[in-house]
Image (cartoon, rainbow, N blue to C red; front, top):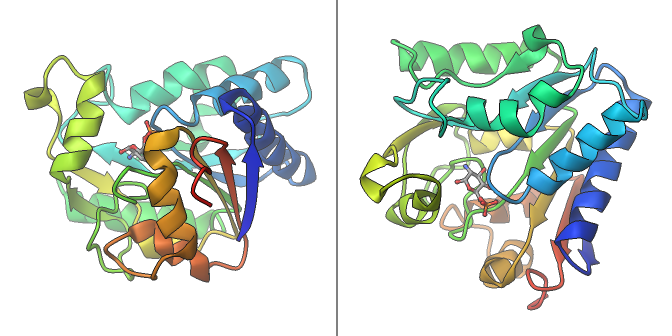
Length: 241
Ligand code: GLP
């Protein structure tokens, strides 16, 4: 694991976007795994700027998002589809055919999960997977206790996750209780992983992820077993390292 500690969120966003940009420049047909949550928003802003300035080109980039809420229509303003459109996709020259996000309204969830895995495989796998981390150590929506061998699947969200994510909804009752998420195994198959964490509330989780026991109780700890992981934290999130 390579750990980079930067001063603040602004520096984190710059550093992360530079790593993604260099992947895109080295391989303009890269397959990117993308994340939602508040942490990558600044990174996406930087990527939008670099695309506007013709530094990076999305026209042949393919993307796969980590997860989507179950039961939410993609046009619902809380869906991760909506989030991605509003924070990245609608501002860059990506081909909409190359965007992949699980369909939270799919009639046959099992089929949706299997076909998502197929699509990733047919694309040649993920070259660079961007991750945030939940307070409870989840990555994507792999909550504590998800077996490490899980592929894309339907997840029952933890109470802590529902509470944390309720800040984006009108009320906690509106937060979906399930989601479709890439599994730990899907994530671990990515060639490179870039994980971002910002703020003091993530400090203990970050410490445990890097130095703690490798356990499904803290899903991100499995990243200790991946050969190419870069973790960027600001001083607050890195304060216990
Ligand atoms: C959500 C997402 C995760 C994300 C996490 C942390 O639950 N499914 O992919 O990493 O929240 O979010 P934030 O970056 O807002 O702390």
